[in-house]
Image (cartoon, rainbow, N blue to C red; front, side, top):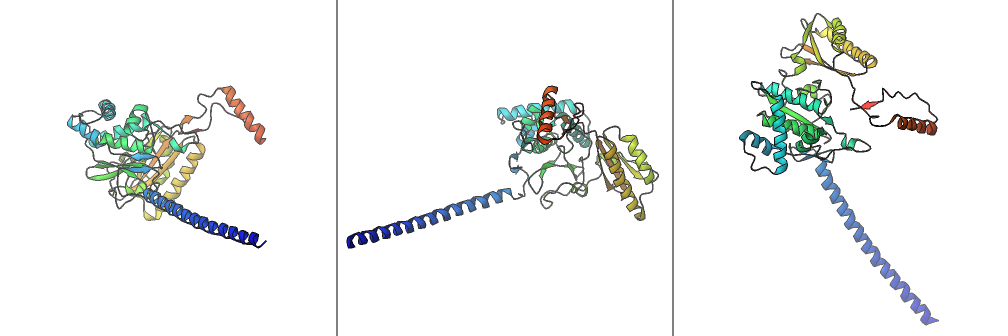
Length: 362
């Protein structure tokens, strides 16, 4: 009996010893893994911080801003021997487009406008990771894929625009926002910088985000202003270039109605300017006008007030028809009816389905 008790004590002690070792090992293992996870998280966090550089920046955790100066340099020098086959094909596609849209004697502004219109009307925005069922084309963030497939995410629009500008000898930079979720361009004309966002104006070409100053652009964009050059140009803001003169603010609604049937931009300035005591009334006028248009028209109406070189206010207005892409395209009517029936049965919700006017998205 004593031997049995002694043996039992030894076994228990051994079990406790092994458990202690196992606990220590587990603790060490856990600490090691926790440390590694923390290090990985810190590294990931560092990579997701807004970097003060133009290229080699990842947008949306998937799309990379890459330099294409080797292609533009080859175009300018006429020597493409240093390019690989993919880059040579990109150069060929870009050169052909330049040959189509750029004419002799064009100013840098006219060249920029021609490229902007081509990108915003010939390409289709690629939803990429923003859709539940991604439809992203290969290389939609790179000029090669953009020009080949005619589809792009914001990075594709920005890097392709920059490639064209650099090929045409116009200084241009790709800008990214502080949250690393979007990118666009800065272009230099007559020693002044301007913001241009072809992706935001895609499918429309309404000039809503064409050659804007920092002051205007910051209404819906945020970026590292300490790194990227200041954009203060107004001379080549297309909307302001087209401004017509009105007698007073009460002529604004009729002026807007006259132009709003044709998608695009239109602008006006008030004769003699807007006196400080009339500024609240002008703001109220445009806010109410915007609400009225957006509630009575199928398109989208946007506007902003900006001061010209003389310090007078210019009202810049933009209208897009919002036709977009019908998400029912390619789906047989019988299938649409079955979808309607399935939703109605499951949610006890009956609605009239207009096949000629399906909700659409850009």
